[in-house]
Image 1 (cartoon, rainbow, N blue to C red):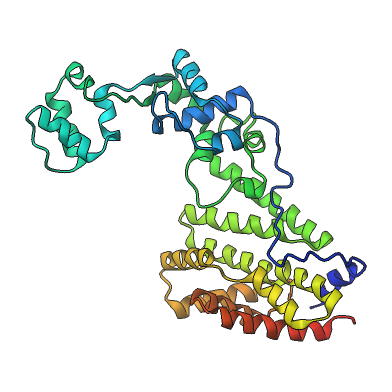
Image 2: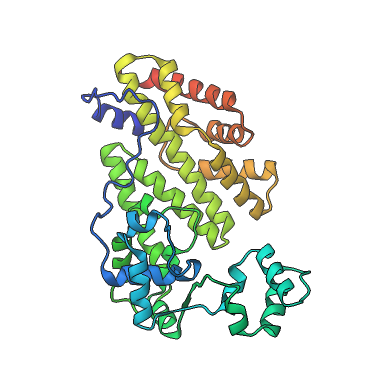
Length: 358
């Protein structure tokens, strides 16, 4: 409790209260707004090109918002002219088509239309010539050439950035420019190792910043990302332990400090406890992520509860929740029990309020 008390007293003179009781996170404050270089834009589109039709009419907004690419077709055609991309043949386009379309083509040539999409594609490709097929397959997709593949292999961090993840790069300050700087001059080395080194350095800086400013929002977001990053590597117990640290600081510090700032003004414990709950609540996506990781660890509910209790007990910084209380809070959340979570928050806030200066 001493740690929180010291932070609270340091903030005592600040009585500005945000009347919106929903969490106001600012994880993107330091994200660069500088437009990525042409080289990075080219590599980004090259890494995702094969999912798009040639002369696509509608591109996802993230290309413009995250990468500053307002006219993807022009970049794709430039990559085609440079030999990094080519247009698919009619046969190569077949896997992109719907099963009903493939069955219709098979019928046109007297072929069986039974089986999976792959079966039908193979059957058509073996019998029908490219010239005969072209009139039934109007669309074409981009294909990465050997030249294009070599460019991506020389910059493997690009494909890793644009591939699907359960975490957000932007949420931890890694826009494409900042991300690319991590790999500047590093022709070798595992992409994931370099990213993990960045996460470790940044998490320590963000923790120290939280100690200094009494704001752990960015630190907790980094812990969340790191936990999901480890899950992606199938390091499930490490991921679950780090996820519990995320929950620990989110509830004990991010949520509690926000509540104390309100409490310093209105002295209403129930209102403060409600703010703790709003910021610390185990939301459905938290529950899904925790249970998914726990299942991969092979834990039943009792084993998971024991693991969580042990993880919380190892934390040195003490907040308003004891390890036992926070473990119970998490278990209530995993069972979808909001009232149980609220009771824990009120009990913890009542005790904390008695220890704070009046």
